Every structure is written in structure tokens, then in C-alpha cells.
Length: 131
Image (tube, rainbow, N blue to C red; front, side, top):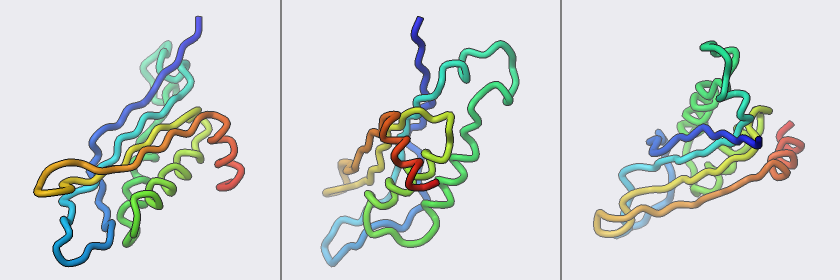
């Protein structure tokens, strides 16, 4: 029987200084992260209530928070790239889907963002780059 499992994070408000805006531009109130991590099902379907048996995502969340507050970012894409590199450091992560988005976009409404999906092969290539 094949099993897959994911760790889902949605709507995380990022403490980020992101974007370059001119006069008359709509400046976003907030930037958010949605993230889905595919991990081995043996880290979710466990035989006991112990942190040693599961994937501890808290260090990754803290690293993302540090990355987001690390200084000014011109683009969502660069922030997302840094988050993807952080995910690649964790061997338990088999695949990742990321979405970084801002709101509002126009007249106080809408969201706008970028998405990135990295499969197992892509993560292997990224791991070779980030070490």
C-alpha cells in the first residue's frame, strides 16, 4: 500500500520588507506564505506519541521567519528561492510547494503571488547546490 503525507502551512504572515513602490502604487499591507511539504508517511503514521518519531517543522518555521526579517527584498521570487533552499536542508522533505503572496493588489482588494513546486529530483539538485 502506497502512502504519502504532507505538512501544510497556510496563511503565515511574513515579517518581511518586500517590494519597491512608486508614487500612486498600491503598497501591500501584508505578505503571506502557503507551504506544503511532502514527507515520508512513516513520520506521520507513528506507533507512539513522541517528537522523535515525527518531522519537527518548528526549526524550519523559525528559519523562514529569520529569512523574511533578514532585510529588504526587491522580489517575492528571491524570498521564495531562499525559503526553498531552507527546505532543501531537511532530508525528511521529499517535495515542496510554496506560494508567497501579497495583499491588497488594487483598490484594497486581491492577492498576487508566485508559486513554486519542487519534486524529489528538483530537491536533490537544490541540495547539491546548497550543500
